[in-house]
Length: 121
Image 1 (cartoon, rainbow, N blue to C red):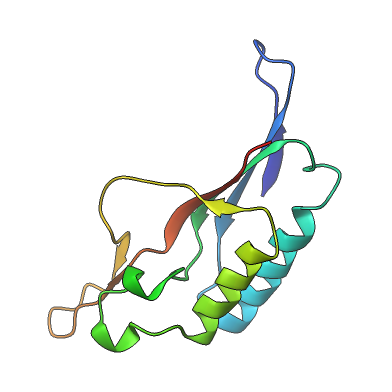
Image 2: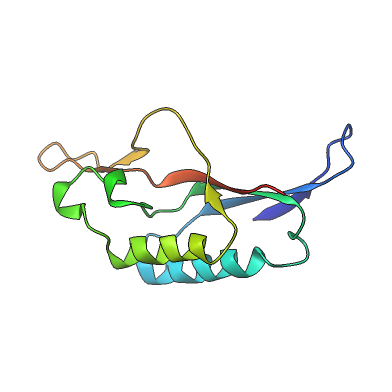
């Protein structure tokens, strides 16, 4: 979901999009394509754009707590390619490294899948 926001005290508008990505890697590919396409759409060009939410995909291997996952898999590659193919960047944050965990006591795992991406014009 996306919307254009204009604050009463400012002349320029910005765009905000909210994401809750699929758990399915293949289905997320359409999100990556949509984000890349929308980044060059006239409704976004020359405006600040923020995309925030649950992307259901770690952007880098270090955002995954399980050592076996410390490699770039297809999902990570696709997400990184989306950001390279668009002017979107990952907003710097402070706080917990991980935003999701599997709640397993016997085989715990955590990832950073929630984030804020931005284009600042």
